[in-house]
Amino acid sequence: MSAVLWLLIALPIGAGAVLALTGPRRNRLVPAGAATVAAVTLGAAIAAAVTRPAASAPLFAGMEAGLAVDSLSAVMVVTVAAVTLAVLVFATGEFAADENRGRFFGLMLLFAGAMLVTVTATTLPLLLMAWEVMGAASWALIGYWWQRPERAEAADVAFLTTRAADLGLYLAAGAAVAGGVGSLRLDALPHAASPWLHVVSAGIVVAALGKSAQLPFSFWLSRAMQGPSPVSALLHSATMVAAGAYLLLRLVPLLDTTEWAGPVVAWAGAVTALALGLVAVAQTDLKQLLAASTSAQIGFMVLAAGSGGVAAGTTQLVAHAATKSGLFLAAGAWLTALGTKQLPALRGAARTHRLVGAAFTAGALTLAGLPPLSLWAAKDEVLAAARTGGTGLYAVGLAAAAVAAVYSIKAVWYVTRPLPESPQARYDTEQRGTRGVARTASAPLLALTLAAAVLGVLALPGPASWLRGLVGARGEPSPAQWELGLSAGVAFASAGLAWWCASRPAPVPRAAARAAHGWLYLEQAARTVVARPVLGLARTLAAFDDRVVDGAVRQTARGGLVTARLARRLDDGGIDGAVRAVAASARRLGHWARRPQTGLLHQYYAQAVVGFLVLVLIILLVR
Image 1 (cartoon, rainbow, N blue to C red):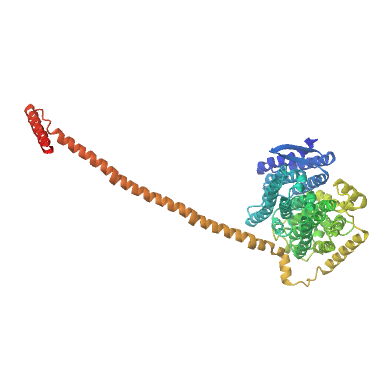
Image 2 (tube, rainbow, N blue to C red):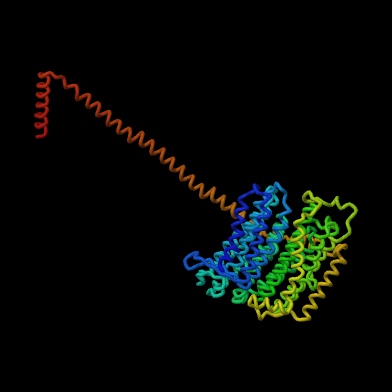
């Protein structure tokens, strides 16, 4: 049965690589081909969820690259594959004929394949590889329209932020090896020796919070909205931002092993859900509102993981994936048709494009947590798990649920208003609108809207018990009747208040409103606290390298040149001069020695007599 698992992984990755390399040459065939691959991948995902295959291969000494579809990953592979199919079908009508569809659809399939590897990996090295591919593909997709500098910069910010947090996985891997977990299997990480166990937990928590856009990393999700709407629908619903929450749900035993990790994760999720919910309320850009709400809703999943609610977090993840992907696709359809995503300019958009409006309204009501829709039931499961961690955690989660109703109803209020007298004057704020919605948008919007509405059955007593058994969390608490009633009352009260106050300015201090609208100045804080000091240190080190290290090298080189010149002068003027003097002396001696050689015999006798007399004289003088 491992063939099904290899097909599930290899098909989107292989097809994505081929499509990405084709470029614009097969633009007409690419969308249909990509959608077909996604449909086959969904079939493989369903087969894998039923048969639960596993596979492994040697990777390093003592380590394997392991893949398996178990109880939790069975839910995830079907969710990822289904959302990918819906988004790619929608995207077939979203791009102009002259755009590079091969690169877009290829990258989308590569990203989906990396996510499927992430959720089925049973060993940390393989998870790390898929994690890296997912980050690189997200960078390329967010910056798909790289010709515009602000989009390329947004992709860089998103990539660098998540990449910095991803270093936690490398830290965790090193600490696990040091702690005696040589196999690096995920289920063996809780058995790492102390104090390495705490380092492993810290690395996993940081990486997961960064990837899921939780505080203080949330601002990268705002920048990621520069990408095409189908990218937002896929990356920010069931895949990239959900990957961190999934990892925490997968490693709940690790969080439970350390006393601090679970509470830290739970409070990080609760605070993010509340704070980013307030950020969403302050937004006037629809995609920015949905982005902030994504961080807030992922916060509920993180809260569930920190509270030990694996089934609750899984229900929230699946319901949010369907809801948010549909909302992003609806926002993208309006952006394409009307050329704007500003809420004041979208007044009456639901009346102009009724199918998109109906899908968006149903999705927003689901996002608001109104009963009996899916996120109401999922949210109560999460809050029931949070209540085991303390009343304070439950209260913050309930407040975040109330805020969710406010920002969701705010969006509905704008798009359902009667059309203004001259709506055309408000359109085309970002691009030239087509004034029509592609025919391919209907089916995925309806499918996702239906799923968002009915997935709440997973929180009913029977299906909830089945899901707990599926993910191995039978002991998780269920919400009491009073909790269901309280959350329903809070949701309806908040929704009614938001509808009533939508046309009236809220009595909020301007400074607080500006901070919320600016995503709590998180990016500015990151630039001040991290980016600028790091760049300053880099500039200082570069100057030190140029002036000290390179300066020393240059001075050494100059000293060598001076020494070489002196040596050359010594060689030319001294050694070579002495050699030339000896040679000249030898030549002169030779010249003088040739003079007596006349060839006359009487001169040789005279020279011999003179030589004999000189020898006699020397003997006499010596004696």
